[in-house]
Image 1 (cartoon, helix red, strand yellow):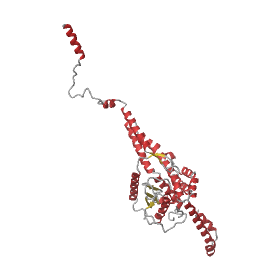
Image 2 (cartoon, rainbow, N blue to C red):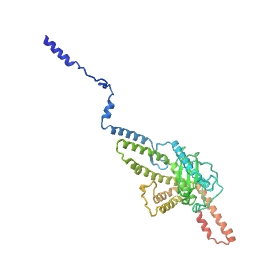
Image 3 (cartoon, rainbow, N blue to C red):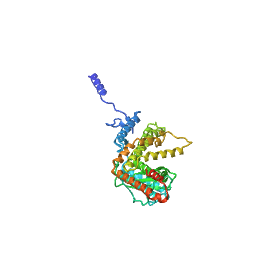
Image 4 (cartoon, one colour):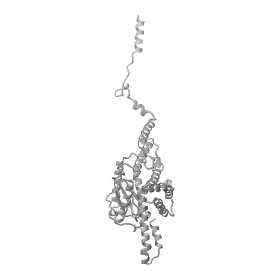
Length: 389
């Protein structure tokens, strides 16, 4: 009997749980469901890779959701900046320019400013992109080789629609501020949403109104394609790449090089070529001669060659802009399309008729009236005809 009791007590002792010693202030030895998972996750040596993969997945989703096409060319690109924010950035850039060049901005009534405004308005009218703020028809007309000597200026042309950008960027009611900065050392022009800035240093490169229209149409083309918003959006990609590589401890300046040579420079050259094409269409819709665009870039290339003479000319891969030679070739390959736009625009046909009628009347007047009185021969007639081409 006693042996049975002993065996029973042993069984009870074996089956009953032994008391566990719990040290004071030690964590709960029996965490509930879900507890302790964080310690397990961060205890895993591969947790940085898991976090990185998750962030990369989120980044891919965000990138794809922000893809859109450039309406004028069909190119896909990443844009995460709203049109409203883009306009605000453009206004900030305009205010900076006004502050930086205070005292060197030509007044609104200056003939050069009025001429630039008229060309901008012609380009905007033809594609329903907006109106120039404070624009009125100038009283002074210019002659042909307008900007070649810096002090004299030309006239021609007038004003159908480019595929629309958001209304905040460019639309029929959008107002544009046009300013001309009297700075001949700066060979440049620029445009932001609602603003066009021209430096007088670019005028000799323009040479005449046709060349000026080519420059202005190119800059407005950047706005129409929202290239500024695209560049700002690209910076978010570069920042995310930098943070990702830094988190993995793999940066070492790699992100800066990747951003420079695989994102910033190629995209900049691509945008310039795109603006060349859009600008060619814009000026053609406004009845300007498309040949003026490659001619202008050829003159710009000559200036760049003179500036770099005796120095090192870096390959196109290292530059933000394509070479002038490649731009001229690319634009010339689209001249057929540009002339088709002119031929399809009744306003251009009317303009050509008026110009031809004017040329004919001027030829007759010089031939039969002024020539005999002034004792001149008729050789100048051919010179005048060349001037109007």
